[in-house]
Image (tube, rainbow, N blue to C red; front, side, top):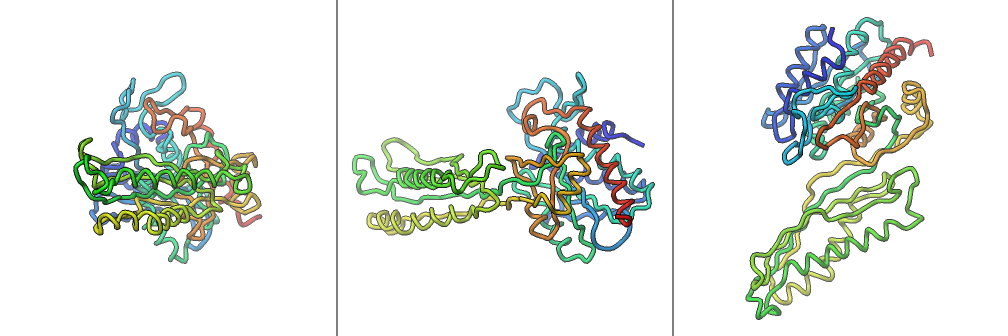
Length: 387
């Protein structure tokens, strides 16, 4: 059978950038599992250009563990790679290629472990989930989670293999990405008071976001388990205006909230909307009744914070041989699984210090550690009835 390195080499060859289809990779995995006698189900998007894959090993019934990973990767456009991005390259014990760390290395280890899981009389179910469009808002996995939520055979625990350098992780922040569109009224700049300057009003909104972000840093709102230890707000994209001698009628900006699990990021958006409606819009409409400020959600996912004393955390500590639990700054679909009643933990090979960057890599040592973790999980599933 293929080992994790050989499988990773094949997985990297599929360009599954989020803007592309993942069906070729999903079909490869489906066929690989079918050759081992494992059936899998595909859940397609509306256009049938992408799919989640869900497979199940072991006995029927509720409980057990789900191994979850996403198939999509971020673009390589504009990055200076020294090796082919979609071809595995090895150097000094490191395997290079887009997705090696985030997170096809983990998927390769899971697939390589399937024969070992099949060889054992598992007493609890093992689920395998491969999703799409995680990188653009954890979009694809939602249909799979909804199916699991309604299923009597729902797993009890989910292990997401995002790159943590094989350290046990119990939490991450949630995210809300929003777009604000400011519609003013244009006029010649020589008569600026007769217009409604959309850029200036957008600037007021962005300034208010900064004030909200400062309040979130208050000591009583911090959680030392996270880095940074408070919720953050930032504006990342802005556009508007046509010429310097025209008062701009349009301005648009995108902002995000990275919220501690205890904070509701929508409170930030709600406060900004209240400010717009109570203070800015009356002034804008006093000049032009057609003025408006509109907000729309781009993407969101909840935070995650699994209790250290939970069964899921105890299992992760056993698998990692460490209860030195931590959190990560990046997000995952973990909060979505947790909301569906599936306790979720995170551990996988590679580091996000390499993810999303040119010459992304995972070390052979990290793959070997992940292989070993999955063998410990195999034994835990086999011995579960004896505990």
